Each structure stands twice: as C-alpha cells, then as structure tokens.
Image (cartoon, rainbow, N blue to C red; front, side, top):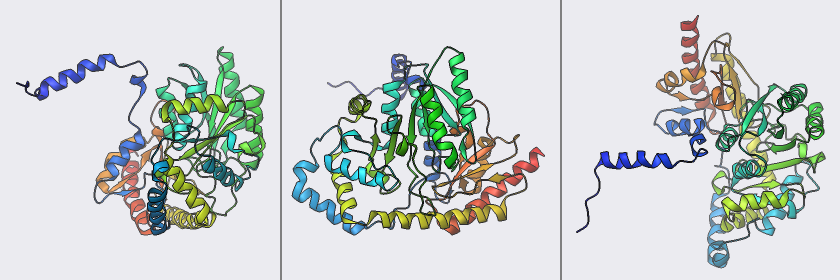
Length: 418
C-alpha cells in the first residue's frame, strides 16, 4: 500500500531541510525587483509604467503565422531538432546585416554567437571573466538584470558616476585607479551607451572613444549592451563603441526590441581571440539556441522590410515619450525632475534627496499605477530618490492617466515630508 502524501507541515519542514544544501552562490540569487513589479502590474485596473515591453501590434502577425506553419510543415525535422551551439549560419549572417545598419560593418559570422537574449550573453561574459570578488564597473544607474547576474556570480560591482550625457570618463579613470590601489583589478566595464536602461542617457560622441581608451590602457574589457540603439527617434543611431574598437569590445545585441522578445534570441559579437571561450560558456547553459526561432527570425529579416518596421516603432515610441513628458510637465509638483528621452523606452524621474521612492510603491499601487524604484538599478547601498517610468507599452491616454495618479502620490509624499 502506498504511503499517504505528507501533510503541509511535513512538506514545509522538508523544504527547509533542503535549504541547507544550497551553494554559497545560490544565496546570492534573488528575485528581480523588476520581476516583482511585473507580477504586481498584472492586477486589473493598474496602469503599468514599469515594464519595458516593446510594442508588437504592428508586426505582420498573419504572415508570420503562415511562415511558422510552413516551417513546421516543410522543415519540421530541422526546425524542431537540436542545432548548432553557435547558431545557424543563416542567422549569424543576417545578424551581421543588422549590425551594419548601426555602422558595425566589419563583423563576420564566425565571430557571432547566437544567445538566448542578451541576458544569456551577459551571463556568459561574467562566467568567462569573473571569479568571486572580481571587480566589474557599471554606469550608475544601470540595468537591473545585469546587477542580478553579477550578484549571482559574487562579483564586486563598482558604480561609476554618469550624467545626462552618459558615463563620465574622468570618473571611469578614477574608478579604475581606485581598484588598482586596492591591489585588485577590473575585469570589464559593462555599459549601455545608447538610450540606457534605466536612465535613457546617450553617451556623448566626444566621450565614446575616450571611454574605450581608458579601458584599453588599463587592460579592461568593454562589454557593450545595445538593445535600444536603433530606436533613436530621429532615425540616427549613435555609433556603437564596437564600430571603431573590434579588439576591445564584446558587443551584445538582441531581437527583443527590434522584432520580438518572446523568441529569446540575442547575440554576442566577440573579438576573434575571445570568441571560442565565450561560445563554450554560452553552450554550457543554452546547449543550442532554438532552431525554429532562428529560422523564423531569418525568414522575417529576409521577407519583410524590417528596417521600415523599426522606423514605425520609432514613431510610436516618440509619440509616447512626448505624451509622457507633457503629462509630467502638467502634473508633477515642484522639486521633481525628469529626463527628456531621444530614443529607447524610459524616462528617469528624480525627487528631492530625502524621498525614498521604494516607499512610494505601495501608495502608488493603491492609486492604480506602478513604476520601478531607482534602488533596483544601482549597486550602491541605501534608498534612492529616483524611479524609472516606461512609455513603450502604454497608449498616450493611459500614460497621461498613469502620470496623473503618480503625481498625486508624489505630491502627498512631498507634503508629508515637508
């Protein structure tokens, strides 16, 4: 006779017993603050100004459905099978064409590694270069997903000061020198130079080469993450760091913002001397990127005017950014400042120094709006007076109403603290 299922208390005790088996690294893996907010934002009636979701409704869905059906019907044995760990040759060649639109014209398919989104690529970079305690430099603020990866690998993250024109080269140089003075070394700089997440900042043209030069002099690798580069509202993407520095920059790209995030397809363009190590590290986790998703992406890039599709995205996001800035101008109280985006998905809002925006999240949810507190985007300790708003996935009317609700919460907080 089978023994009965254990009662709830026994199952909880067993779960607690197993926690003693966790590795030290597992204790550093935490729920993403952004993911927590995403879960909350699913509640009915909430206006989410939190998630950086792309606008997909203008994609040729019927045609993509036909392509997907044909791929299964005619090439199912390949599309549903294991594939190359580096990605298909067809997609890697197509990725080189995509990068050429942003002035990276010397890329070759042999140095492209297809990944499960740029997050997977960043994981591979961290695994290859960082032992526990090694130092990585980042902009401050920076992408929360990168911070989560660094935390899981027990990396010592040092934030480098930035302003509305991106990373400050003098601060970068000082940070490298400070680490060296401690008897340590910086392994790499992680940077999002174009329409950064969360700040929306664009690294100024006269700073770009200097950032790479500072790193080259100190033998610090540059990991350039560029998910939003093509989404410049004026249609003129800033020149990537990789375009002029092929031996010193690992370039991370993704289809999440220019095609569809659900495909989970990204890539690394690696310097030739680093490609094999990064490829093997990625293969350890991914084994092989999904063949069907790669084939669908290739057909999309070949059959459709994907550049025109990106232009349509830029126009949608430009209008929504303008709607958000206009709503902020109309509704926000004195003492609140914000960035004016020229591309990408985000506005960075800053309140007076004494306000902790994490404490505003609960009242904001009660008021029917959700955002991401600034503390999620920094390795620095302590509260943050900033927060991130995203305009990419919300219609103009919803943006205006969401900002109005948030302004009420902020006004009440400022009145209380005053």
